[in-house]
Image (cartoon, rainbow, N blue to C red; front, side, top):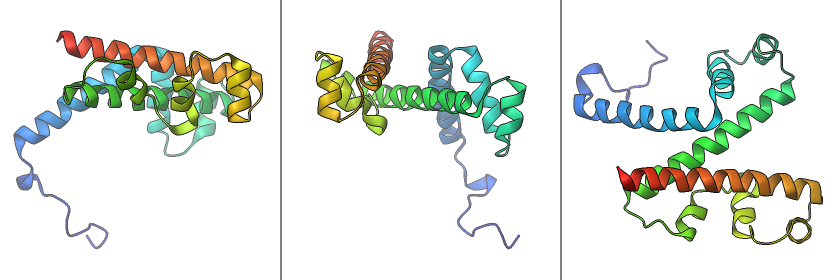
Length: 160
């Protein structure tokens, strides 16, 4: 009992309506993320979240390298951040504009910066970001995927 903080809510302190809303919101974004990343990546992330830090076990179970696991983790996290931002924008009633869509792309990894320069060619983006052109092309592809995800989520939410 000494390890439990004093400010932890007890079962009687939780409003059932708030708990239901939180569960609905969690289900809402997780289903979208799972749909966008696919069953295989979602299963890897599920296993990682339950592995207690045992990355080797998950890598062996999925016949992947640690680098491959990292790629899946990064892809799912980027997608989740984008979906959450798009849902927040939709819930705030923001219009479906290019700037709102770009604002849903995560800043982490420089993807929002690339999304803002999406009309430029890879060499211009590489020069601007001081990265290799091949890395610029990979970031452009990721930024385009995240922009598409944000647009789809915003459109679905507007139609709902």
